[in-house]
Amino acid sequence: MFIQTLIEGFMLRFEKNYTVLVVLMFYRYSIFMRAKETRTYKDRSEYLINAVAKRRKKIKQKAVEYKGGRCQICGYSSYMGALEFHHLKPFKKEFGLGLNGLTRSWVRVKKEVDKCILVCSNCHREIHAGLHNTKLHT
Image 1 (cartoon, helix red, strand yellow):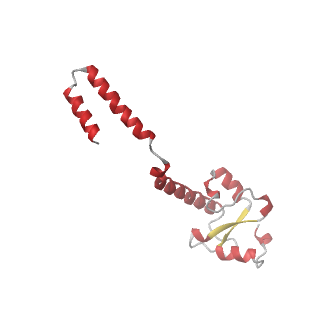
Image 2 (cartoon, rainbow, N blue to C red):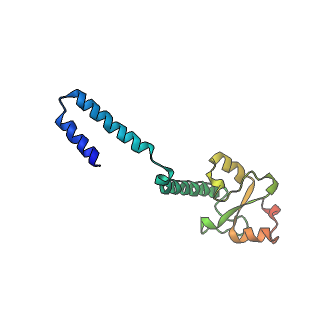
Image 3 (tube, rainbow, N blue to C red):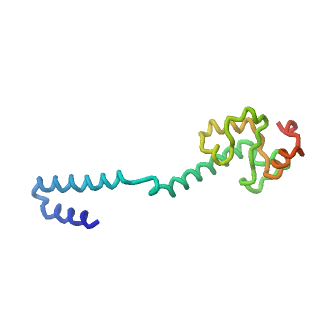
């Protein structure tokens, strides 16, 4: 910060001497570029984490709406976070639709969602326990 203030002072003082002005502007630009190059992932990690979380939530909202917005077994629709996707044919599953799967494009997510039914957390556990026949809900 001190160097930038010093350079700006020199620029005001030597504004009629173009050679000095050009050298000072070049020096100021090189400091700016060096500062830009040293930026790391750590500096932007919080922003990137929030941006990815926001996108995942948006994709999940879109997928839930695409499948009707409610559990296809019991009709639950109070909280989107409690709704999950159950693959009807797990052997055809390209990727899971948990949080990691929602980083893909909407086209790929939609293709995968077409292989699933939308169920609430309770019904999903009951499906895996063998209490529900998913063939009735296709």
